[in-house]
Length: 468
Image (cartoon, rainbow, N blue to C red; front, top):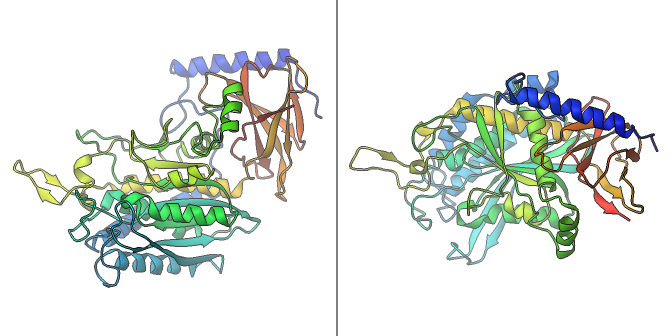
C-alpha cells in the first residue's frame, strides 16, 4: 500500500483549491468553452483528438439530413418495400452508407441490419418488422469493452399513428443520425482500443422499440457496454422564442439508477451517492474531455434522466444497468417537432424541415460526441471493484480496487470532492497499486478512483461501495 499523504497536506491542498475556485468564480479564470473554470479532472485534447475532430464535416452532415428528409416519411409503420419513400428506403440507404464507411476500415468495421418482428403493442397496431442499422468498429486492444452512439431514423407528424403524411424529421432525428454517420465515417479509418457501435435505430417515436431490442440483445450476449450516448434533437440552437445558444449542448443524465435493486437502494441511502451513478460519472467524463476549444462547445449537464416527463433511446440501456445519457439541443422549438407540415393563418411555418436546422451547430455536437467516444475508447476502462474499507472506524480512508487488464495501464488516481460539489475538485496520483490510503475522513467527502494509461488518458471515475 502506498503511504498516505498527511491530513495536513490534504487539507492544505483543499484550502488552496477552494481559493482558486473562488477566484475563478469572481472572474479571475475562465478557460473552458462555456466560460467556466474546467474541473480538476479535465483532460486537455491531444493532438490526435484535435486532428480527428477537424475532419468532421458539417456539409456532409447537412447532406445526410437532406437525404433522410427526401424519403418523405420515415414513420415506423410506413412502407418498407418502396425504394424511394418510407422507412424501408431510409433503412437501405443507411446500410449502404455505413457499408461504404466500413470499406475504408481495413476490415475493422462491419455493417448490418438488426431486425425483429414487433407483435401488436402500444402504437403498433399490427405485427411490424423493426430494423436497426448498425456498424461495429472492433477495438484493437480490448474489443470486449464497448461504447454505443445512436440516433433514431424514424419520424412522425402530429398524429403518432399517421404513417403516410410527409414527416421530414430533420431535427427529430435526422440530425442525430447524421452525427452517428459522420462519426462512423471519421473513426472507420482509425484503430480504437475498445469497440464502438454506431446505431441508427427505429421505432423511437412509437415507444423506444428499436433501442429496447438493441439493448436486450447486448445484455443477453453479456456485452460490457461501459457507455452509451443517444443524439436526439441536436439540429438547432434556436429556441421557440427565437433566442439562440449556438455553443451549448445539453446532456441528460440520471442519478438514481433505473436498474437499482432494493439492496442497492438501501446501500445508496446509507452512504449517499444519489449524484454518483455510473451515468453521472460518464457525464463528468464528457465535461472533462469535450467542453473545450477543440469542440467549441459547452456541455450543460442536466441532472435528469430526460426532459420533463419525456424519454429517449438511452432509457432501455439504463434499465439494463448500462451507463447511458442523452444529447439534446439547448432549448427546443416545438413548432418544428411532431408537427404536420403546414403554414398557419399568420404565415408561420410548421414542420420539422431542414431549413430550421443549423448544420454548423450539428457539426459541433458531433465533435462533442467524437471527443467523448474516442477518449473513452482509447483510455482504460472504468475501474472495477472499487471499495472503501470500513472494517475499522477511523478518520482516514482506504480505497481498494481491481487492477485492469489493459496492456498500457500506467496506474490510478484518487479523486474527491465535498458532498455538496457537483464535480470532482481534487486529484491524487496513486501509482500502479490497488490499495491507497488518504488521511481524510470518508464521512465528510466523496471519493472516486480512475485509471490512467501510458498516454496520460484517464477513464471515467468509479464510485466506491463500502467493504467491511
